[in-house]
Image (cartoon, rainbow, N blue to C red; front, side, top):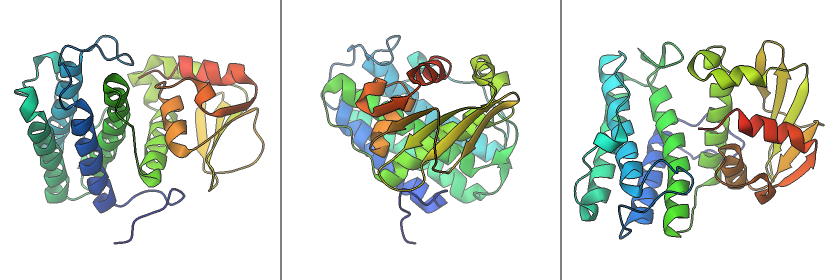
Amino acid sequence: MPRNTSTDLPLSPDRLADGLRAQTDAFAAAVQGVDPRTRVPTCPRWRLRDLVGHIGQEHRWAAGIVRTGAAAPVPDPKQADPGAPTRWGEWLRAGAEELIAAVTDAGAATPVWTVLGPKPAVFWLRRSLADTSVHHADAALTSGAAFRIAPDLAADAVDEWLTLLSDPAAPTVKPDVALLRGDGQTLRLEPPSGPGWLVTRTPSGVRVQRAGGRADVTVAGPVADLLLVLTRRVPPDRATVTGDRALVEHWLAHTAL
């Protein structure tokens, strides 16, 4: 199956699986040989071992939800047992494969539990890929490794995060999202190619469109940088901000992961 470009969304389940493998491999490479006690600057409550534990737990937790279709308690990464640091890569890859297999066996369209209500099983593959990609950036910023992600995966992670924030159930999971309501203010994320994303703050919530055009503020840059700005891994100045910067700051203040 051909791979999608950064302007073609959504990605196929096969591409999401390939992406999860690639980002899990890259995460494992970024933490290899680094002291497990190292503090993660972008997740200050966690040390590197906690970050590794979170990724491995998340994949296995999501796999269990897909297999049963039912809710399960969110695990504590500090309770994870990723094994010796020399075996972290093996443990991380096994978790990713467990999730991929669970979605494949269940069928991507099979309804399962999610925090936002019933969704197709592929929801958890996409959610885990996006989260793994962002935490790959955390690992890279901690260890000094380069952060790399294919443009289509970065674009899908941006789209996935905006989709979550615009879901009507989002404020019940993350109350701060309710503060994003507005009376028509617009924010545009503009990658080098493709329509980008136009976010409108309405009285009933956030509306997201894949569209170009004018906005109150535009954040422009490579799609990987847009992902890192949107998830507060780098400051907005990593991209080019044009227009009402206060709208960007307000958005970031109420969407922290």
